[in-house]
Every structure is written in C-alpha cells, then in structure tokens.
View (cartoon, helix red, strand yellow):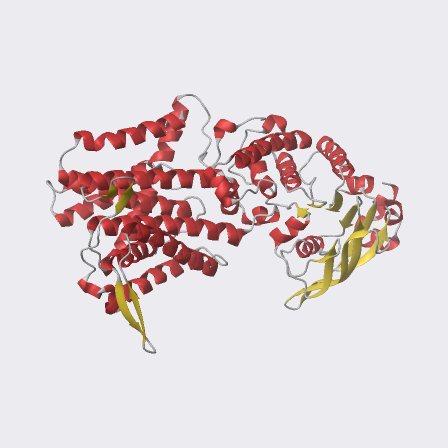
Length: 261
Length: 347
C-alpha cells in the first residue's frame, strides 16, 4: 500500500449517484509517480465513470479527487488537462475527417498556444511555434508507430490504429498522468504486444498511467498495481500476483480459468 | 500556388474601376463587396465553428448605427434627468468604434449562449437582432426611428501634407471596400490556420475529445464570435458611410438570409466560398433586372440557390476544389482549408 506522500493522484471517498442508481460508492485509491495502475472489473462496475470523474466530465456526488495537491472538483475538463491529467476514450478516440497529422496538431493545442495578436500578425514567434508543432506531430506519430499513416484520414484507419491515434493525441497534450480507457480493444495479439511496449516507454518518459482494460494478459503483464471494482466499490487491490489469486476477484470477474494465467 | 491565385484575384478586382465606367454597376459592386465582408464574418462562425448566427445582421446594423451616430453627433435624455450630448467626431473614429461596439455585442452573445450552443445559439441571435431592431425603431430621440439618420458624412482619410481625402466618389468607396475586404480575408485566414482554428475544428468534429486535450470551448467560440461580430460591424460602418442614410430596415431578417445564402452557396468552411457566393447573389439582381419583374427575381434567386445546392451540395468552392483534385488524379481530401498544407512535413 502506498503512503500519501508518494501518491500523485488521490481519490478519496468518491461516490456518484444517477437518480437512484449508485454508480460508484466510496471509491478510495491512489496512483503514484511513474506508476502503472490498472482499474479492472466487470462491465458496469464503474470504471469509465471513475475516469469521467477524475477528468472532470462528471461531478461526483461526494468525495474528492486530488492531483499533486490540487483539488480537481469543480474544474472543467480542459482545466484538468492543463494540470497534466489527460485521458483517452473508449469510442470516440479521433477527429475522423482529418488526417492523422492534423489530428495531432489539434492535440498539440496546449503546446501551440500563442497570443492572439501574434497569430494574426504571423509574428516570428508564432511561425516558430507552428514549425515546432509540425515537427512534434511527426515525432509523436513515429512514437506510436503511425509514421506511415501520417497523411491518411483518421476515420479511414483500422480500429486498432485509431486507438493509437487516440493515445498520440493524449500524449500531444503533454500529460504527466495518462488515463487509458480500454486502449487495446480492437487490437490483435501482435498489436497488443507492441502496445504494451509503448505503454512502458510512455511510463519511462516520466508519465504515470491509469489503465482501464478487459484484456487480462495485458493488464497482468503491464501493471504495477491493480484495483478491482465491482458494483461501484473496490473489492481488491494489490500487485498482479495478489489479484490473480484473490478469491473475491476470481468469483466476481476473472473466473476459475484465470488462476493459471 | 494558393497565394498566387489570391494575389491575382485581388489584382483583377483592383483593376475593375479602370475599365468599368458604369456607375450603376459600380454601385452594385460596392454594396455587394460590403455584403461579402459581412458574409465572410458569418462564415467564420457558420463554417468554422458550426454555429449558425441567424441574427448576424444585428452586428452589421449596430456597426452602421454606431458609426453614423459617432460622426453625426446626438443629444439624448436619459431617465433621471441626465442628458448625453455628443459632438460629431470624424467618421474614421466611428468606423473604429463600430468594430469595438459590434465586437462587444459578439462577446456577450457568445458568453451567453455558447454554454449550450446549437439551436439555442440560433434562437438567441435571432432574438438579439429583433431586440436591437426594435430599439432602433423606437428610440426616436437617438436614432430618428423610421425617419432614418440622414446626411451621414463620408469616411475621410487623413493624408499627410494634404489635409484629408474625403472618400465621396464610387471609385474611392470601391477601393475602400476592397481594402477592408482584403484585410478581413487575411485576418480570418490567419485566424483559422492558427491553433485557434484547429481548436475550433476539433470542437466541431468531436467536442469531448477536443476538450480533453485542453481546448477551452467557451473561450475559443467566444473569441470567434467577437472577431466575427467585429468584422460584421466594420461592414455595417462602410454601409452607413457609403449609402449615407440608414433606417431600422438595415436590421431586416432578409439581410441575414442574404448572408447565409452567400455563405452556403459559395461553400461554408471555405475561405473563398463567401466571396464566390457573394459575387453571384450580390450581382444577380443587376443582370436579372432588365429581363424579369421584381417578384420574379426572387423566384429566380431561390431557384439558382436550389440548383447550386443540388449539383454542388457542399457549395461551389469546396465541390469544385474536389473535382479539380480528382481530375489531377489526386485523392480528394475533404475540407483542407483549415490547415496550411504548404508547411507540411518535418520542419
């Protein structure tokens, strides 16, 4: 269990109700600096809801979320992105009618800000920033392995490739913590394997990662720690080895077959 | 390539008064030019943020009235026994104030309605235009109401060692309108190709995703509304000082519809679209007048719009651009205007 000092993201007593439905009740966990933490659980357990709360798309009914000492409650999603918390999405992960390259340029918004007058007058600094962004977009595409798809429309890419665009978009926003929502769904085994390496290289570049995923082999191989949710509450937490053998987790989610996995 | 085309177009437009002497046609070109500036400003909202401002004429009319009143002066009583007396100022100052006043209105409308957007924005803009029209009609002491503001002075430019150049003739006004149009075009082009433009495009395509990478939706859209309203105000000011008489009819809904038609037919979301659409629909009455009765002209107007949209559903400019690139054997990439393709590739 980690101590409060090490934690960068702290979720404390968070709960949310939609009318009479309790989507999350009393959620408590933390993510440390450069840690890869996975959030797993059956469909409807509240994983994406937890993501939405952390990134400001939903307001919790009670509880608080803190990131590096800043209370996130009441902040808008773009303000939370400015603090360094950036997420990907399960479904809508790209701007479909733009090329991969243009997608990344939109993603680079935070880094490409110049003052209005500089942009309008096309001052040297604005042009310099634009040139830097064009270079950065290409670098990012190479990083996630989409260098050759740079000038294809994002909507025309395969499902797995769109996932990668989504990750590159999030990376373009220069996060210090990345929240990945089912990033390998739609990827084949080889793509998943490459993706695991990518996740590790992202962590090695200094980014903490919170992952929601159903692909158990991937979760087990990449995570430092796993948090298991069921019916809106945490039923287990610990290293992959502990989770793999936890009776409550096996009962609720993994099933008997996963013990040997 | 694109820069050359733009420069050639500007040069061609600048040469028009050299060979065209007909004052009636010149007049049509000047008023068309003013409406093209307004249509360009509408396109910034409709084409690049996807927000339909159906009260866009409000910004145009506010620009016209502010500019006219600044240069005419006024003396009005306020509740509580106060009086505001304003001595006439030079029309150039009025032009500047028109932009500021319209831009401020754009700011408030944007702040008010961009939290919800879509149909809500359409309704707010329509209501705003109607309210402003009623104020212009009924605040007789300030605006003369239906009696109209008369004898609005022409814009005069200070020229060193010469005093000032009063832009009274059609030739003067043609070049004035052309200059403002070019400035507005360049301003909009640079804006939509900056990171602001990319943010707007992101918001239009996938707002949730755009917001998650740090785009401030309200701020971005409000900025677009301010620029759009400011340019519409500039067009209104040009209108007031050229026509030299304005009444509350400038706020008529049909003027907004005209702008929308120019933008949609030319191609929303394309920089050249409102110019092409504006030239077609602005000059069509000139050519229809000798052959058709006024009522029939409106029918022809509508038919032409339907035919254009039936044959070229995305508007003239984007559809033709797509045709051209297909003919050249390239794959057509839709809507490429936002991004500067010349600067592509690793820097």
